[in-house]
Image (cartoon, rainbow, N blue to C red; front, side, top):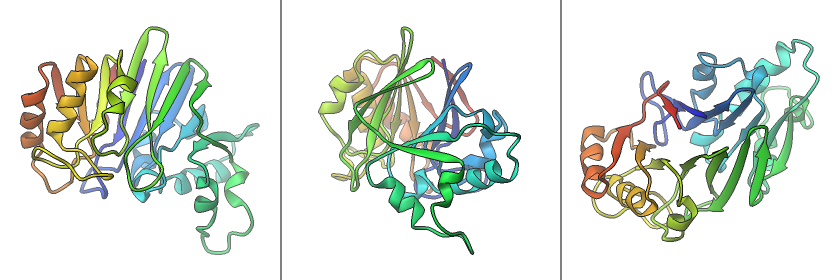
Length: 247
């Protein structure tokens, strides 16, 4: 199992950056998790979007979802005899949110030309992957996830403030991909964690590797790295676009 970082910037992308997006792959299964600004472009470096098995959207903030629109237009206008619609798993009510944004003269349920929408539940099997989900502490409904393929387990926090319940949820994950929006000892309730809290979470989970993502673009990531290492004795790395995690 591999996880490809397609977008790692928090809230907005700087030069050569993209907002949140990860490609979980275990050939022939390819699942795109979150589609923030710039993810569509970066995806092409690794996979033709026609080869996607499914898309998962953890929540409806713009920095996790906006590139679902350009991917839609690529699929529509380069059909390649496409015989299926790509399943999109999304928090309840998310389909209506996405459909409310109309481009130019688009009419009707235009996203359904290439996508079929499903609500995220507790668990989900997609090809070689089994996903488990848990709501996080964030300002809108948001889901953390654990992805399993055989004996391999990787966790992704999505956006969240500190939550003791995530410790049990991520137990058994060798790899933890954690948001680390802020620096210092404590993040903001129902919003985001700090790098130090991400390190503490990885330690309590028993992970061997921690990857920090969603760092506020104006922060020095080297400081975030050092703060995470204060709480976690395993391997810590700042995620960058196109980095490939072998699980």
